[in-house]
Length: 286
Image (cartoon, rainbow, N blue to C red; front, side, top):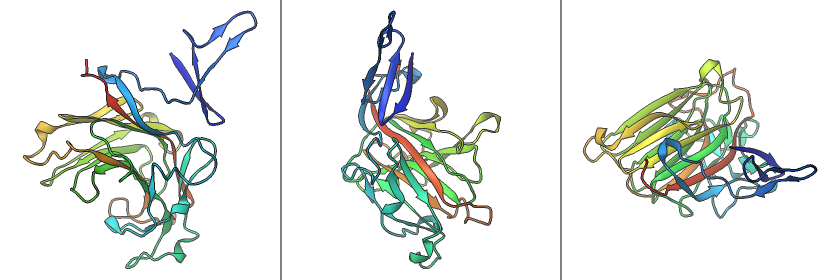
């Protein structure tokens, strides 16, 4: 059993069976920068193939891994302007995407009026992957109009409708997240997970993942599978998940699904990202 904590950008791993050796006056601690594999959830073994631990100093995210949008994209009637300055490492091992309203009036969201600035990152042209586990550890914002997402789209850009929504969330429903698929021929599969006991995703970090196989995709929160979609249930030609996909992280504001911010919404709001990891399966599930 491993216990993991953050310490000045390093991951400190204490193993009671091997790495922690206690004698009369000796304590040995193994310090590793390599993120651990997620183990054997559902009988599957995994191998890490790509990650960002966001362990750098205060500043922009790694340009070798991420593209940043500088535009109002206007999708879904959203009300944010995406600005690179709204995504930054905090120097404590996190990427922080901030939605703020104090500079929205300086931006053009025609034909709408900008409600906020925010950020959208994506890996197209830098990284794409087919099958495996797509995972992020996130602390979500809260409030009417907040619409963060961790998702993947068909590569290359613009090549199809395919979309894996590993985590979507509406800020006015702080205890519920969604895991969705959007394929061809109108194929849509929508699922939800609710934290027990009235807990909120804005109160602490949680791990969101999708386990992606040729015949199915499962959605997980904190290692618990809450939904699985099967190729066999999709209409003919609808399953569009056999090619590499690239990753996206964004914090949208407003739009058709959540609706606009209102008088109850408090800015700034933050999507805090501890890590993003991609694993490949090392063998068939057991």
